[in-house]
Image (cartoon, rainbow, N blue to C red; front, side):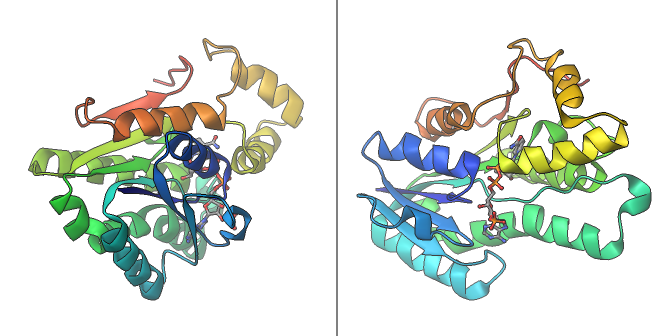
Length: 237
Ligand SMILES: NC(=O)c1ccc[n+]([C@@H]2O[C@H](COP(=O)([O-])OP(=O)(O)OC[C@H]3O[C@@H](n4cnc5c(N)ncnc54)[C@H](OP(=O)(O)O)[C@@H]3O)[C@@H](O)[C@H]2O)c1
């Protein structure tokens, strides 16, 4: 039995790898460069771009060989920009990486997951729950994920579909986006953080390990198909 984690070298992805590995579950750990995961017992690194059909085929083979039972889709890129700055090239890149790879990856593992009554868990975002004016293309890519997950939930069948919607979570991806939000608001990143953390009940950003715990929870037999906000109490709407 195995679990596939994409973006496994990233902040949230590596926390998901830790969560599954700590429960003794074999992990297929995919990232553009997964070499940082080499040498870990029970972890099989898979380096490559999810837009590459060869990488998807390799994942499909490994899924069969290891009896894949769950996928956590935790790759992605920042896509913050106000509407006037959203060129066609930028929009296309964000949507292709953050959204189009998700159904493509599903196609590669569907047969195995169907046989194993598996789980397909996509990491969307709080930006999939409400529009953000400086984050338009990113929001579009994440709304698309939740729409696809909900359509799959509605179809029913042996595979359970879930999405996790993290709020602001400490990571290089957030720090990159935050610099742009701060600049757009005429603030320093520190001023932006102080203001941004205020509506979060916890009074701080989330930690990647909290997203790993949510992914592990959803991979278990109990939870019904769900869209799970993990925002520390932050509600944008
Ligand atoms: N951090 C947050 O506050 C936050 C909040 C809500 C949702 N999320 C979502 O959570 C997920 C993980 O975010 P994170 O904060 O952990 O970001 P991260 O640390 O940047 O991790 C994302 C990983 O995905 C990899 N990746 C990018 N394009 C890929 C591709 N085409 N094929 C395979 N791997 C690819 C990245 O590689 P490179 O580094 O080499 O590009 C990186 O290792 C993303 O979908 C993000 O949108 C994050």
